[in-house]
Image 1 (spheres, helix red, strand yellow):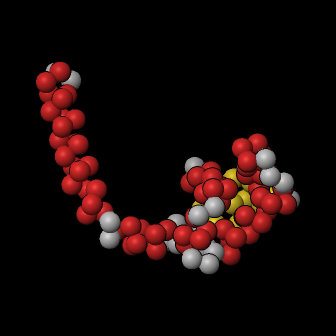
Image 2 (tube, one colour; image 1 turned 120 degrees about the vertical axis):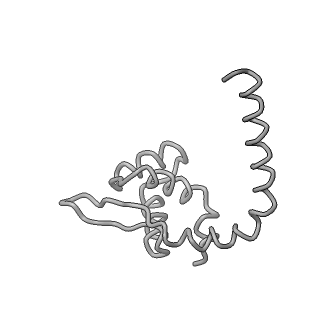
Image 3 (cartoon, rainbow, N blue to C red; image 1 turned 90 degrees about the vertical axis):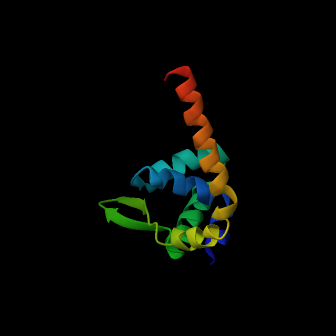
Length: 109
């Protein structure tokens, strides 16, 4: 599955956001996703499976718990694709940073 196919789903993106904060037990992930999206535990498990199989997440067993962490390696594909477009926004962000700095100087911050 292509990285953008994986990231195209809002539930999977939310799971990755959670995992970016650190390791989470599957039960914690299910609780958050069920509360926010109203989907079943089985549906969350399917999303976790897609993330594992596509390499975006890893899992380890700790007793009866399954602990998930993000694996950033597939994000390199996304980063490489986005790199083509950075030339469009980087100069604008640099200009914005300059204007913010000027504004702070004027205020004496």
